[in-house]
Image 1 (cartoon, rainbow, N blue to C red):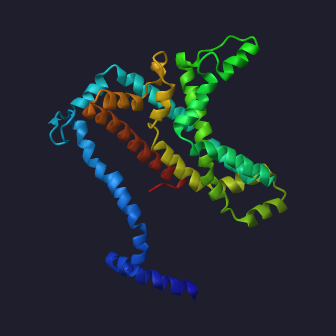
Image 2 (cartoon, rainbow, N blue to C red; image 1 turned 135 degrees about the horizontal axis):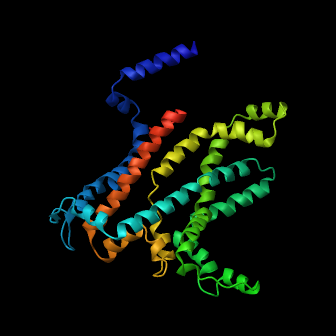
Length: 314
């Protein structure tokens, strides 16, 4: 009887127009109005500036005053000597960052199955705090361990009788420093989403598995991971949608003239030509190229996830 009543209500709602539903529930729409206006102002209005990618703009000119050059800015980037190097470094950083995707899941599963509550709370605090601190500060702390001969690691090497290493002068150390600082910064915060999803696991399933004699590892694999699989798929798609977005601030702090071959990404390149050299049209074209690649990655990963698992972002 209750199901039939609910079905009739849904049919009645579906027959109403959008305006009628908005008028009926205007209080709820007023609650989301500030967020809607914020998105419009900061996400959609700036899209007007995309035309900068097809113009040559000088300081003091408005967007429409810039000379229309068509695809010239893109051709300049693709034919430049910096294209292959910056693209290669950006792809390396994106792939290495993608490999760290399972770490928040593992941390969330460990915290969720931790018996000692004090240990769990302490671990949560320690892993969450770095995210609340500025990227500049967390990267600076990492650099204290490796920057100069008086750094912590080099002091330890000296005491062990090992040669010191100039980490910031060699290309091969750039990616490890970037990834380690990234893991320390965001792993704990990203695990919050998975912990929230794990809180929705039905306790009866866990109790039934314990009665059947399942080990903790089997319960994690067959119950916990199965219940949070939709969350994992959605976040995986969203991460692939930012595949080309290497942290410009962090890379600029790691970057020196000696390791430029590995630390020059599309983000740092855009910063230099856009703000330092004031080539606004050129920098916009480079950044637009990055966003187009991210958009293609997002659509592709969403399509594959929908075909393989039946779950998708849209």
